Each structure stands twice: as structure tokens, then as C-alpha cells.
View 1 (tube, rainbow, N blue to C red):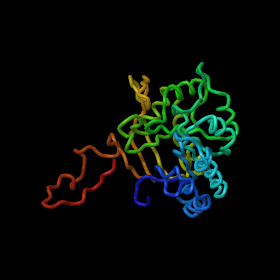
View 2: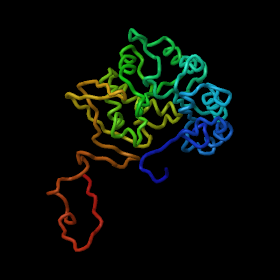
View 3: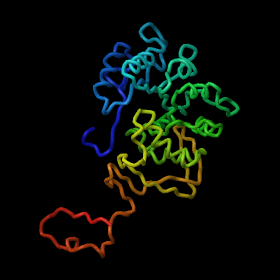
View 4: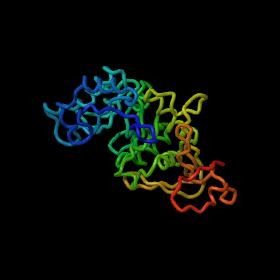
Length: 300
């Protein structure tokens, strides 16, 4: 984490071995250890995570319906941090409304909100009342695209009915970077074509996620803030996007990145905006060298 150019912040899984099949073993849900890990690594850790717990087999004494969520919330209470929940509802024992209306605290985050398993829109295309009630009590709804967790049938209809995600994120990994997700910009562009205005898309990709993880000094262009800047271009044309169910949505806009700065340093410059024309470069550019030499960077 210290070596990467990007800033990396993390959630600690309530299951001590981390993500994977082991998350089914409630013996690994160590509240004290998780809270301690967060507290001792507060520079990098922003909360507690629970995911993938007991999605198919019948519940039993070794696998109570709410064990993972409840232990994660206990750990969140112990360290004073939010909990992020990756969840699969299984009514009647584990219904979705109970998660967002009773189990989660104000400030806790439900990610993958537009996944196919969540009953957020009724047969008439209207968002269920309990979604707005949960938002009013402070539950945070994150997009969390992922390989299987974003469906236009939920997202487009929810946004059209006034329920946009509180934050926009990718859940990007090697399994979806060449599939339905591709990039943060593609995910943001999908939000544009679903009806979110540009300022809202930008805010919910930068400032609002920073607030959600308790780092409001990030995701801002305020004087004195660290200069992490993305220069974006709003392109107009005919563009198509797909969701995780291979549904397509067409639109007239797409966001692309022209330049990125990290800590004030240019780390991406697609259009070579920071360089000089080659004919105008100084002597060292024109020199024929017998051995490899360091290449001088001449700024525009």
C-alpha cells in the first residue's frame, strides 16, 4: 500500500481470514480482533465489512441468519467506524427491509444497491417507501457495480423515481475489468445516461464517498487540500452501456479522462497537454547518444 501511486484505504472484514468461502464460518467473526485491527491501522482503515454470508443453504444453529451483519455492527460500535454490507436477502428469515430499517445504523453503507436480488422497485416502477425511510434514518446506499451487482432494471427505474445512489463506485477487480464494469468512468457514464446530472455524478464519485468513510478532506478542490485532480471531458455522441445481466442502455454522453494529478503530480496525460512540441525541444532532445541516458522531462 505504501508503494502504490494511488491512495488505498480499506475495510476490515469481520471474518478474520478475509473474503472467500471462509466467510461462512461464524467462528471467524471476532468482534474484538476486527475492532482492534481498525483502531491500530486507522491511517489506512475506514470501517468494517461483511460480505457473502450464507446465501443458499438453510439456516441452522451454526449459521444464524443475521450473524455476520450483527457481529460487523458490534465491531463498528467498538471502533466507532461505519460498516459496509454486501448482502443477499433471504426472506422470511433475512428480509432486505429489516437490514436497512433495523440492523444497520446511521452512517452504515449498503453497497451493490442496484443488484438484482434487492426488492427496491415495485411492479409499477416505483421505489418502495422503505428505501426512502432507510435513507432518512441515515443508511448510505452505494452503487458498487461489480461483476454481478448492477442491473438497469433496478438502477434506471430507481433514479427516474428520485432514488439515486449516495455514492458511485465500481467494485473493480480482475474478474470484471474486461466485462461489465471496465472503469470508474464507465460506471459514472452509466449514471449519466440513467438520468443523473453531471454535477451530481461528480459529487457522488468524489466528495460524497469521502464523507461516507469519514475523510471529508479528500475528494475536494478546497484550498489546502491534497491536489488529487481528474480533468474529465464530457463527450457527446452515440454510446451504449451494458449491465451485469447483459442488458444494454443507449445514451448520448460519455465521460473520459484527459489528465490525472496525484498529490499535484501528473500521472496521466492522454492528450500530452503538459508537453512541448517536438520541434521546440532543447538540445538534449536532439542528441544522438551512444549509451542509454535518463530522459529529461520538459514541461510545457
